[in-house]
Image (cartoon, rainbow, N blue to C red; front, side):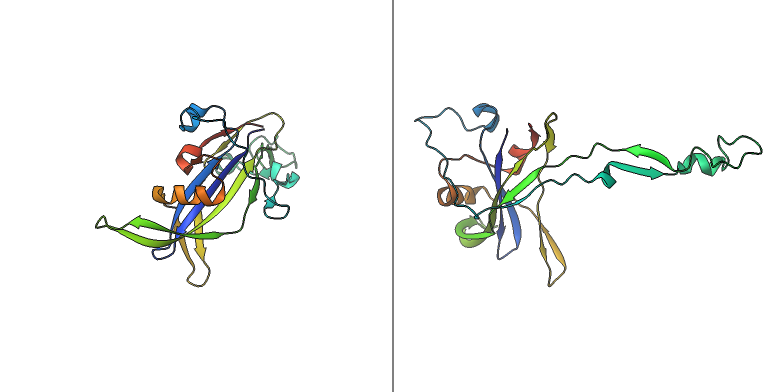
Length: 197
């Protein structure tokens, strides 16, 4: 099982979202780009029951099969495949399409905040409130790896505005110290890849 834990953060002033990531059980240390260990690794922190919420992947039969008309064919020939004098519908109508729909289980901790020094446009450090959320995904599939390309958005329901994620590398050490120093952090670019079953 390949479990990955990631977090994202939101800069309160500019309302920009920074994405961060923690990984556990990454295939190799080289893949995680964290280098060789200098001391025996301590065990990751265990969370109390109920700290995380989990949204499991739900397989829905109605999403695996759809029926559609082949509109390009029917636009050229509405009676495509129909024998003369037959009342049967065209075989280009209501064609059955099967889809291999899969998903990941998503577990997360509630949104949190931390103050960090973030450089501004002039290069000066400014104390900034950063919002972040730690989560991990799990591939419940029994036989197939799934490509994981995380992208996060924060929605302001009052202003009906979406804010895209933004990487803030200076926030990563502070979040790591608070959440779990025994788990390496990765950003969403480093997290992109296949999640094994």
